[in-house]
Amino acid sequence: MAIPRKYKRFFILFGGVSLVILLLFYDALLPQKKLPVFQPAMVNYELVDSTMQHLKKFHRIGDFELTNQNGKTITQQNFNGKIYVADFFFTTCPTICIAMTDNMLKIQKQIEENPNVLLLSHSVTPKIDSVAQLKKYALEKGVKDNKWHLVTGDKKQIYQLARKSYLAVKEDGDGGPFDMIHTENFILVDPDKRIRGFYDGTDPDEIQRLLSELQILNAEYFPS
Image 1 (spheres, rainbow, N blue to C red):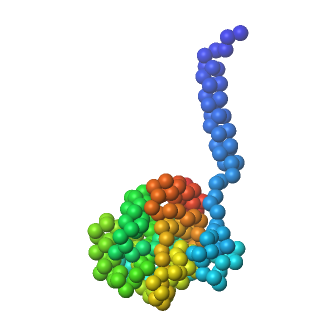
Image 2: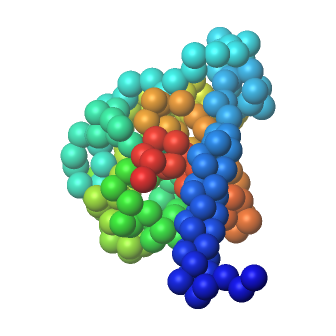
Image 3: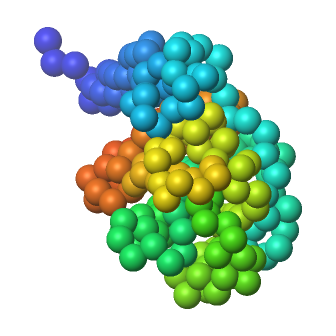
């Protein structure tokens, strides 16, 4: 027996709505992908202060007070409720910093409209990288002040942040106090001050991975 046209339309519409509902339920029931939380014991021991190499839980970025390219005091309060990408560099670096800065600029472009994400670059040569030098560098490179802080300050504090918080630099340098050799690492930090990823800041493929995982972290903390 032929089904009247008005019933055909009903069944088509009903089937379409049902399919959408089923897909929504399926998506809601799927476990949300989450990034790992990195602890000092999970990281190359050369990049971790010897007092922390055994730690397997509860690691968070420590408090800090530094000065950015505009002479503004920057503390952990500026990153409250924010995801951010951190690294270590110096403005006169002739090698890996060039690629790192270029790639951080690419990240800046991608996060420009996202109010939840910031960038933070620490100078490992704070005596050379004065506020004026950082400002000059920022203007030359196209750093946007509302998204990206280039910071300088007390070398001991930067050293301790690098070794005890971000787990990102080697301690062997020229032998001076608190000397350090920075790596190419970009560090992804969540709003709870936990490290959620390490990436080679000179590698385009790693930058794409960072951007993809940044979206995962953004969805974890700021679901639409």
